[in-house]
Length: 258
Image (cartoon, rainbow, N blue to C red):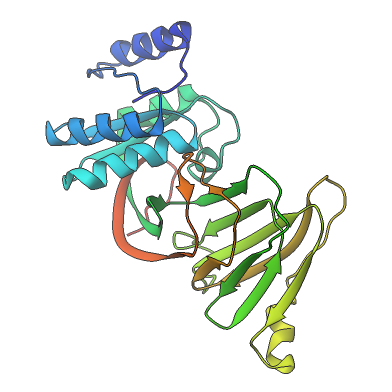
């Protein structure tokens, strides 16, 4: 399943896969919605592996389609953009390494978090496309509120982290105007919660807060939030864990997580 792939790169990938006796069908998806539909259709046709070619949103759209089908094929990923979060997490520096992984077809189970209209596997990027005088209120664990006119909210899902971190999410909030924290905790218990807060003025957007959380709720906003798949996220919304798993094709040196 592919989006925005040049004919030259397409032919290179098809040729490489054929040289290594990997056969299949090639479908073009020109939007996340189309990729989701194509992935669901392929899963219902009992393909054993469905490969997303593109960027992180292509992978997420493919995963959404597989989950919608109710089937259990493995999902592969060939990144066309260097340094995407999924490529980094799966240790894939380029499309040739990703294609090589398909030969071994080593599989790993990854947990998925839930957000409106889809899932998160590694990271979600929620952005506003226009400024607003009304702030966004972000509530963590139902007891700490952050009030900000943020224009970018990064949610890192830590459910697949092997470093022993006992949290579901890492939240990073970026704003061009700074933020105010409104708390529902006592001052004593608030101090360790804010100990990981970090400020930076090196970019046009300022890193306002970096906090761990078990659940994240976004509310009280007239902003239009857009996810990395271009979905419009209406508020209030909740980002939390789910019982969904997806099987991904990983490299031969990747540690299996079951």
